Every structure is written in structure tokens, then in C-alpha cells.
Image (cartoon, rainbow, N blue to C red; front, top):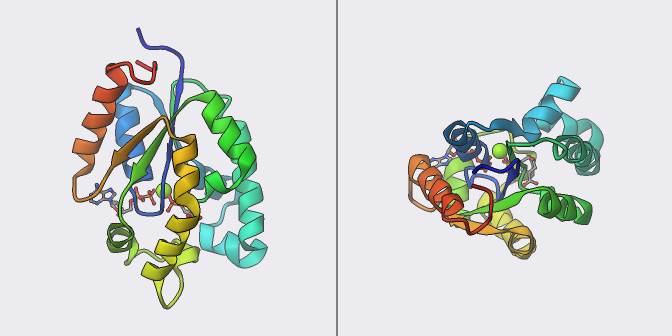
Length: 177
Ligand SMILES: Nc1ncnc2c1ncn2[C@@H]1O[C@H](COP(=O)(O)OP(=O)(O)O)[C@@H](O)[C@H]1O
Ligand SMILES: O=C(O)C1=C[C@@H](OP(=O)(O)O)[C@@H](O)[C@H](O)C1
Ligand SMILES: [Mg+2]
């Protein structure tokens, strides 16, 4: 029996949270939400513009509010942004309201997948790969702290990642399916 649960996807930029999250929702017939999409919908501007006018702290405040509003849902796959775990209240809420899946991959793989995209202001630097490594060092323990399941997306397609997640949910390790 499928319980009324939520699935929250965390992990670094380029791990594939938004892409895998959408496909996973489709596979489970769950609603799909993406916190960055929701922030952009609410403000009517893109993420770089929010960072430009309100700084990272302004963005984090908006992200926090979106998490508060969205976690009340049911049967939802929520793809979060890579920095969601920085806020202890976000970590607490995600852990309490659903199954948290950490999509993991190397900084090199994150870099390869984000290099052509100008939509991530934290990577708008001379040394994006170095920045990704630093962010991973800071955040990896936080991803692991909240995760019920860790899945690698290193050198594999999204279809294979989604299949593994569905199989592991069905195996009952998390109690979702
Ligand atoms: N497993 C994968 N294999 C190849 N490309 C991927 C994979 N997962 C995501 N991508 C691509 O990498 C980019 C970043 O993916 P995205 O889902 O936006 O990551 P995130 O939301 O974690 O930052 C997108 O262009 C996406 O199509
Ligand atoms: O790692 C981060 O702090 C961020 C990740 C981005 O989302 P993705 O992880 O989906 O790229 C987006 O929320 C914002 O640019 C900040
Ligand atoms: Mg995303």
C-alpha cells in the first residue's frame, strides 16, 4: 500500500535533483514541486536576479518560506536547491515530513553538468570547480545528516537513478511504498 508521504530530494548543484525529481514523481504518480521554480514563480524573476537584489540571505529567506509552505503537502516529490540543508529548521522539517533522498555525485560531475548554465549565481566565479568542492566540504555532512537514502548519480543516466530509487522504496527500507 502506498502511504501518503512526501519525498524530498537534496544534494549539490548538478546532482540531478530537478531532473530526477520530475521523473520520479511521474513514475510514482506523485505531484512534483521544485523549490527554486516555486521561488521564481512567486517573485516573477530568476534566481540570479534574486541574488543580485537581495543577496544570498534574501534568497535563503524566500527558500525557507517555500519549504514551510510546501512540506504541508502529501504524495509530493520536492526537488530542493543545493543549499536548503544549511538552515537547521529546513533540515528538521524535511526529516519530519517525508523521506529524504540524497543524490550524490563528484564535484567534477557537478561541474560538467552545470558549466554551460548561467542560472546558478554561486558558480558565477573564476573557479567554479573549486567552489563546488568547497560547498561539498561544508554541506556533505548536512546532506548525510538528513538523508534516509543516498543514491549516486555519478556517470549514469536519470532513468537508471529513478529505477533504483523506486526499487529501494518498494523494498520498504523507508516505509514509503
Ligand atoms: N544522471 C544524469 N546524467 C546526465 N545529465 C544529467 C543527469 N542528471 C541531470 N543531468 C543534467 O544536468 C543538468 C543539471 O541537472 P539538474 O536536474 O538541474 O540538477 P540539480 O537540480 O541537482 O542542480 C541538467 O542539464 C540535466 O539535464
Ligand atoms: O547550492 C545552492 O546553494 C543553490 C542551488 C541552486 O539549486 P540547484 O541545486 O537545483 O542547482 C539554487 O537553489 C541556488 O542557485 C542556490
Ligand atoms: Mg534544481
